[in-house]
Length: 237
Image 1 (cartoon, rainbow, N blue to C red):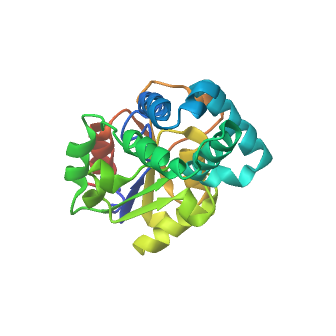
Image 2: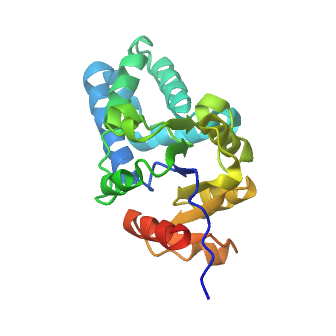
């Protein structure tokens, strides 16, 4: 008996941070780079606020203004504005500080399997991205692999809200049921995409069992792009 295979999805959309590259060490380095810049160009801020103090101030600001959860860059900028004001530094320098931070924040190194995997998908499906963060694919050098890139700050909503998944599908011109979403977060990515009517693949690079804890059943679980492409070929021929 022949196994019935599904047609290839029309689109595959990806999460970015921790799916295409590790983000924690990049953010740590970016915050150290920013603080070193502050020490030189806005010393009163650097003297009054450690990296951890700036982080705690952002969390406090987010608690007061939860709308910032849709734009983490705006949250960081607002946090610096408050710190500059308290330290008596020139607020004009905030934008220079943000430029330094974003340059370091986008100095990511994709996992080794990412570029070969994207190249294998080229021509087979439409490729897009959906992110709650503020990675810049053009700065990173991967924008040519993505037809659509949607970020939470552009829409004013974030994963797992179904609206952000539907917006990306609409921009690609495909129905949610004809698209697959790939991400590392069981709740934001897998559960969010499935509730939006998409199939969802869990990019589980760490061997996590979070899906059992949260009772989420991914349509597939892979540890890298090679396994993702193998699943696509096995399921769709």
